[in-house]
Length: 306
Length: 306
Image (cartoon, rainbow over all chains, first blue to last red):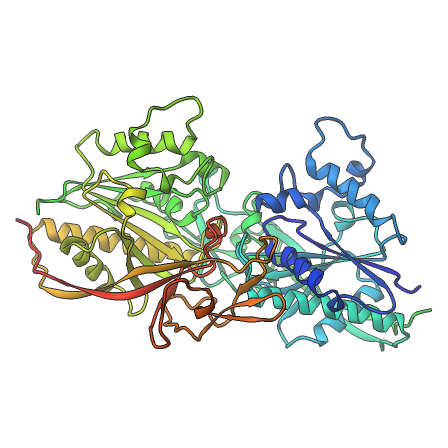
């Protein structure tokens, strides 16, 4: 693997996720926080129009607009703002001092997820990066999730992209604790890249990660309206193991719904799952009440710059 | 004081405050929860267009549209949706079985306010109601605030209006604990009215309440951008006493800002204030970072229906 030359940090991919937006402002005032000697770091306010409105997006989700289909399509009058912006960003990332090697995308969630690093491969480089960031934070704060197929729905022109998702933080609110954790995770990411570039050796190890088993939908009545709420035992318990017999919803008529009642995968009583993105505000429109993951591990080889 | 004949419960005055919206759905399926023998209870989804969009409002804040000026103005083509809706609601409240005697308006906040009852008078009837609801809940859960002048900016056609504000809940999210607390506060309100109507005597007592001292603005840089965040010692500590020397903001350059630096009222070191609505998402656009209140008490006479 070659040296990292260009790193780009995105804030405001979603215009109501405030800590990335304000970290960019903070770092503008104090650029040494994100400057490293061995590579160039640039920042980009990804969706400035949505930031102005303090909304997730104007026309459509920017984070779902980096598809081959969109990036290669012709821009016409009806092309939504975010589809245009995805093309613009793609050009920016490949212009100037050369293509972006590592993209860091800052996000927030209303779920009690603490720090969740999102990646789309389990290659040795990325997994060593996950391991390094995790090692720098108190135990239990950092989890990571590999979203397979993300290549088709997120940034596809970078050799390495990670999402730094931090919560709980309400949409449109800036919290000191969340901003601080997101900054720490970013700083550790940059430190890892600097160590890699300057010849550090990362020993072979085993790195845990999560993969998505299923997005669980909200319970709905005959008219299609949501008719229940996340069960109080599941709410705020992102990453706490759940099994088939655990309660996940309380319907408005008092009925308790168990995980086995709502999951479409075939599961057995003793299977253990790790829920996350529990009650994320933006996932209501995607009909996702929470996400069920399984925990895996990857044996990674020694890493050293070639 | 005459018997209460008509009670109206509003949900969805703000379209992204979910527990009132869903309590209305729940009670539609189980109306006995809000039905009482001595008065009629009706419910109203106050801002259905904003609820569809899951936004606070479409054109302007409905909760600030019940002004004499608006209610008496002529509707023209340019009249905003919420200004029209306020007039419609005003008519509805005065039609049918007679004028609404008590209005209960269900709200959420992203602040850690627990239950905050909002009223616009400290009359004996309202203060006995505050006292009754508080007595039915665990200590420390319920606070109440008198917003003087609210008559001009909220509903002005009802003899008694109370807001049941519950948090913390992110905008667009429905939480079981918040929904449950809001339902309990509503049920206790209705129980109080039923007890009053059926001849119960409420002994003379002293009822604590809060009044607003000042809305504290966000710190801003020379270009007018927010340049700091609520201090971690203030965040989530709604109703915890603060004094002049307590930290309230951390600027992005690390500077800690004290209460005395941001409050415009003249205060002395030992004055005690009770902050609330700390980091409420919807108040960013109103440039309110938090609200400073003082605690008062009102001696109320024995209450019994005449």
